[in-house]
Image 1: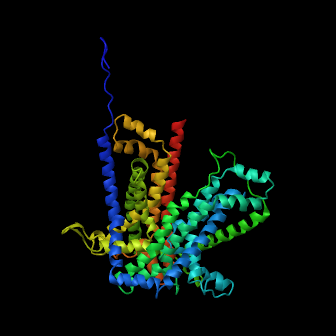
Image 2: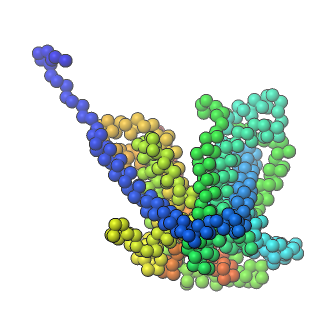
Length: 571
């Protein structure tokens, strides 16, 4: 274009530096990949190396042939937990959404209560209530019930993870279009027929996804089988006894690979197949509200089931709290503070250590989760699914398997081409008494939930918001720090909160790397349960539950403050 006299050339528009943007993305990607290598890659590779050794291969063969009972028991336990937990989550979610009664908020929090306690706290309470000399089974009804084995494990693990199904199914219930139910009523369908012909078919994806998640949790659990398993052998306990009893790490690794196969298979099905089985009910946002179900044929059985389930939860947690204030609950109910004196005298260091490690791990897990989500949603459109899958392995890999991998990977220095690149991180000989490895496990287990929350939050943000910053010359990293993070702060707070609560209540994933130098509350509770000192265990559990509730309360206050700030900005 030729300029005429008097015309000036327009100033050139400054374009964002693609090289700088790409460099920032590559730096973040490199940090994430290095973290995943240390948190997942190295432990899994060490486990594979040990599991594919001659002794490990023999254990694998035995696991499918001569010693197949633990595998069959594990699959059966997973199926039972999946059915019970999903059913409990369904009835509680249905009551919460469709029934009209007082105390819905109480029902909600009671349903979620098992998520904030140690995994074997409920097992200890169930033994006290329903064991052969249990308060309810024997002292009240004169029955000698053998609660150990499949039945007890199904109840306890199902109760522990039913909240996952409850939240999943409730969310889908709340997103159903009310016009569907109005149409069914207009066509003369009863509420019972509507339940089976409309409601259930619409939430089958949520039911299937919940069942698969609970199946994985059921086969992966170790703490409850150690407390309540009895003669019912499962793969997780086989791994533990192979290491703790026989010191046969190769056999334990082989058994771990046997457990890893169904866990990863079901996880992949749940994530990449079940999640696609969705039903579109509306083309826009549903209008109106769901009308309460009033048919006695539904309200009565649902009410009975929900009442029985919540009564069991109340009994379990009342037992935990009361058990810490009496000598021996059900035997000598004399009030005492001795158990809390014991916790204060010998367990205060474990309380401080556990809380400190959780507070260190949670921000790291949330940061990595957000970084993975940012890469997956904004920058790695083609390969993002692979990174997403790798990030989720922290929860897909059973805790026992991951913990064993950490023990194998970090109990000795890591060498690369003759150079030591990672010192000893796990075990009593490591710096910090093994605390570094425990924190790393906390981070690995805390990433997946934060990653899912961050991906969901980023997908709700219009990319043009970030593109506007980029068009003004901001690099990708600057845009991420100044624009993206403030918009997804609720997801970040959720990720940090979950990582703290998950870290403070876990034992399965760290049982192989705990040390006397680094005392963890869940390990201390397990020691007290093994020694039969249930009162001390109940006191520990109560303290841990209170700490978790405090963390959740602080997180709730922060979220409320963010919501108020958003409303003020919009006003």
